[in-house]
Image (cartoon, rainbow, N blue to C red):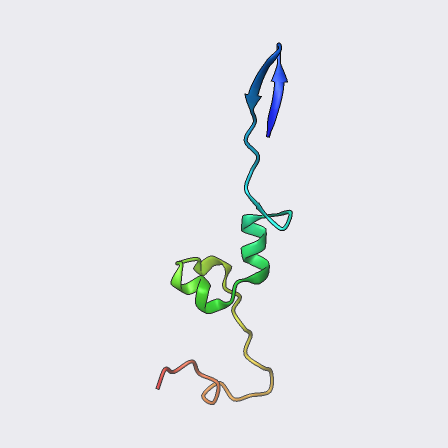
Length: 64
């Protein structure tokens, strides 16, 4: 965007947006966990809670 200061045209940079939203807010609202992991944004991944009433040995996070 350009504005006039003292009769001269100056460029004013605006922060980048996507559909009027800040880029970080857009990523938080629309990114899936796989994309967040691939781009090393682990702090934005929401961890699911273990359901109540289930034995702890049944609900362990074992990869195999």
